[in-house]
Amino acid sequence: MAKRAYSSPRRAAEAARTRELILDATATLCARDGYLATTLKAIAAEAGVSVQSVTAAGTKAVLLIAAFERAFSGTEGRESLADRPDVRAIMQRPDTELALDQYLDYVADANSRTSGIVRAMEAAAQLDEAAAAALADLEGRRRSDMGLAARWFAQRGLIDPADIPRIADELGYVVGGEAYAYFVGLRGWTAADYRAWLARAVSSIRTDR
Image (cartoon, rainbow, N blue to C red; front, side, top):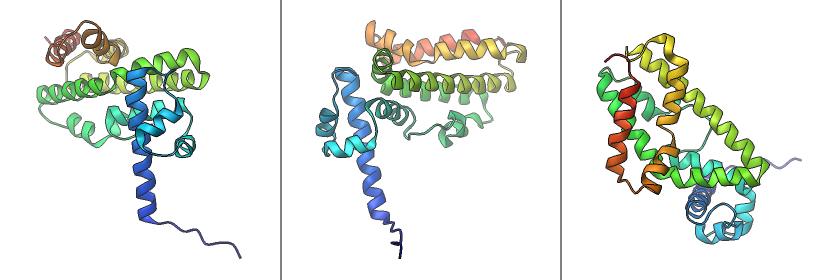
């Protein structure tokens, strides 16, 4: 007789918490020490779990991408930004200026949490084929998200619908974590300086003014 599958909510919750600890440790170490210097053993020590638990959770490249997703939006997964409840709530606000302001707050906060991870992912892509493929996939998802954002801009009358493809490219550059890493990480700007620049940059994209 086959054994009956047993599922314990408590066990599932513990497994989920262990994975969160592993992903948070991966994000911390890769951002601080770099991808190459971060070992699975170091991740285990930082997370307070066994090396076996880390190994079972995935390769270092897989963990890094999942860590980015968790740091950026709070959960890991391939869903579009527009499918996330907090972003969807922003996009559905009737006051366009308030919605845009809250969206930029969301982007600025997310970039502040992930800029170090982005640098680690770029370094990982030079060393690991799996990391390169994962980064390419992530970039594809970002392009899709920016397309959605550009269409929202058009629906709200902020841009000409004919400009959606170009605006999507411009938004991808402006709201990307690379700009945050440059201004705050390299040039020493404050988070407030960056947020003000972000507002100016996005305002310059609009064609309704």
